[in-house]
Length: 285
Image (cartoon, rainbow, N blue to C red; front, side, top):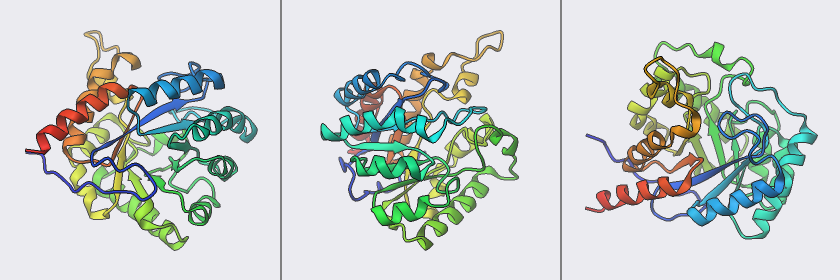
């Protein structure tokens, strides 16, 4: 039986009383699922408005691929990719998240109207990030992180992945608090796929309620990830292609919404909004 956790509210962000849907817009040439599709700013902007029309609460704009083995772009290139998109969406009144590990990208994005900072390193990749978050007052997604894409999978070693991820996230939260980050605006992310094997991901999902001890809103990103491709592999062992993992993504969105997770980060918004509507109807009775 699924235990339903309280749904946290985060000041400064939408509060619809249900799990939020964060639509992914990768302005990159090399993201694992949609690399190159939205690299042109006009294409990324158009896609963002499509996701908003489908019901996205927040658009998460990122200019750096964090898939295993990815090479980091120069700061100037990351800025070139994301800033036109952030400016256009913010000017249109959309709630925008900037997905970056760099203060040199986060600061201008926040100045341009980004309402949320999603840092997959949880402030560990850039020594100035937590101070920027504290000074700006924007909500902050703090993900569990053990290293950059180039070698993170070599660090996927745990005696008990759930207890260790909770402990390491707890340390990251303490560091953020020490830097002055508002705790009611800090959102945790267990970092599925980041220095985690497929089995680690499943263990985290099966024991997600244990993260309640941290007392924070939680964002979960499972959309199209490799562990779903492995689960749905063909008879010859070939993983299901990323865009063919949407049904499995929607299934997990349903489970997460029934657990009252604060937000899900997805590529396809409408299916997730439908799944959340079903979960809300069940929870209401």
